[in-house]
Length: 156
Image 1 (cartoon, rainbow, N blue to C red):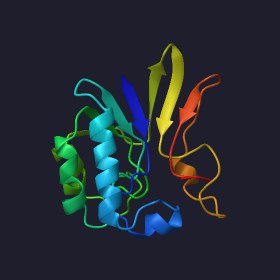
Image 2 (cartoon, rainbow, N blue to C red):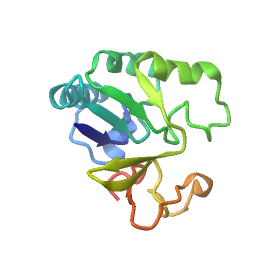
Image 3 (cartoon, rainbow, N blue to C red):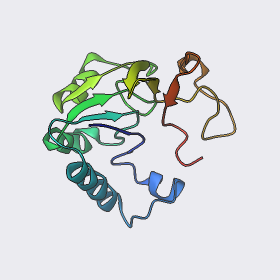
Image 4 (cartoon, rainbow, N blue to C red):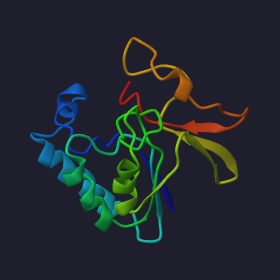
């Protein structure tokens, strides 16, 4: 089976109030998200994280992902240190993600889901979680008839 998720924001305390997540602490949020992954995804499944997997002290928040089941794919988002748009991108940044099992797919990736063409990307073709439309250079081109799976805009 193939699963898709986005914007986990592990380790990001402010996302709780920003997105009205039902957690009393960042530790409770991290535990719930990682437990849900472990209970849902099987060892032979694929899990695609469409950006913003972890923030803050990622040396602490990324390692628990290594023990989670599934073949892990990351399409980096603007809060991932391995995102190609990161002005301070270093080779060791990407290594932190591959060390926990992620195969990294910069930009966007074209997939097939039950015969349907799908583009998976962190960003939508337009719009943003803020008034200002940011990241226009990183938005995907979606072929006619293809689906777009994306994150970035959270609940908006």
